[in-house]
Amino acid sequence: MKLYFAPMTCSLSSHIVLCELGLPFELIRVNNQSKRTADGRDFREINPKGYVAALELDNGEVLTEGPAILQFIVDQVPGNTLAPPPGTWERARLQEHLNFISTEIHGASSPLFNSEIAPSTRAIFKDKLFKRLDFLSQTLVTQDYLMGTFGVADAYLFTVLKWLPVFNIDIEHWPLLAEYMRRIAERPAVQSAIAAEEATQPV
Ligand SMILES: N[C@@H](CCC(=O)N[C@@H](CS)C(=O)NCC(=O)O)C(=O)O
Image (cartoon, rainbow, N blue to C red; front, top):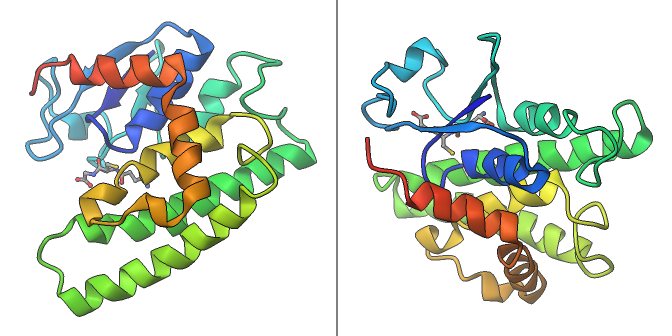
């Protein structure tokens, strides 16, 4: 398997899960501006949408969209603790979390990377994001992780919440979320994924 990634973007969540499960994979860096890959290709030939993450299987099939990739990866190791089995009520609950993170946190954060949006528009996006963070913080009152124990939804949420400082949002306003981030940052697989991304050369 090959994981196409750009450092500290949403592809980190898939990278973390590959490391957590100890699966073999090749990490290929993508320049998100030029769309060139570290092995010299035009990334749009691999993912016509032009964005990471993309997972390429040994048979040449390519899967995109974070929540789909996360679930495909986790299902390669039956019985692991990172996701409930497909077809169960708990799996539907996991998909509820993944969809929430994808649309309400990841999707809602994306415009904040744009330095050209007007301050008033930025304030509207931030206000909506704060409501979602309030909800997540409430979820963590009774449990350490979204599904009770660490899993793929936490790898994804950790990844997108790492962007908050870029938007000048202080996570310490949500102490439970700040603790959650510290807990996940201590995991060896998370540290090794981040270190591996930092060790790659710019494309
Ligand atoms: N819907 C996609 C969104 C992926 C996405 O937002 N990727 C960003 C990095 S976090 C990216 O590569 N952006 C570059 C671009 O859109 O050109 C998913 O969930 O995987």
